[in-house]
Amino acid sequence: MKESCRRTDERLTPYADDALPAAERAEVERHLTACPPCRREAAHEEGGRTLLRERSSHLKCEALPPGLRTRCEALARQYTARRHAPSWRAGLARGVVAAFAVLIAAGLALSVATRRSDTVLAAQLTADHVKCFRIFAKDNSPGLDAADVEQHLRDEYGWDVRVPPSAPEQGIQLIGARRCLYGEGTMPHVMYRVNGKNVSLYMLDGVRRPPAELTGLGYRSRIWSRGATTYVMVSSDSGADLVRAAQYVMQKVQ
Image (cartoon, rainbow, N blue to C red; front, side, top):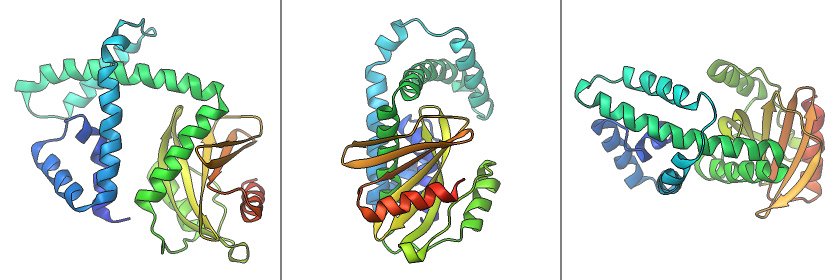
């Protein structure tokens, strides 16, 4: 992934919220003009924000969980403390409180749904699988060393996880790892290619779910747990190659 794409990806959320300083916003827009994959991702981000704004009046009429406003105000104070423009700070703080209230309320609903439904979890991770491979992986992505990927996840995010290495004899190639979001927070997303097919492995720490296999949106998700971690493998195929890959990955993460 290009460094310019990585920098843009990190700023798409504040870009969609119109919260970037003018210079940074101009830099993002220059990149989006020249980069169709990032431009598509920006459109998805803005679409989600538009939906939340359209539903904001309804959400603000709902009873909020105890302490939510206090949490939003604390987040707003942290946000504005990093800015240096007193003339608009007070107005921004009020806007951020309202925005956080909407986003957290929506996030709470998604979190509850994720905990209760394997189908919702699989749909979230399938969407993330499609997005990450479309934006961050290339057809000629080189294979990576599993130890290097594990070190990257430790250094960048504090995750001490076991990453199954490439297995050339089975057509399994490790091509990357990212931090991704789901209804309960963040998680490692390890990316593979299996005989040319894109395969994702997600690791949900502190979560235990019974084993399950689901098909939706044209993708197959396999869910299993080891210790205090739930693993989800997502692929666009359920053929013999992918079955062997799943068995290999399940064995290696033990």
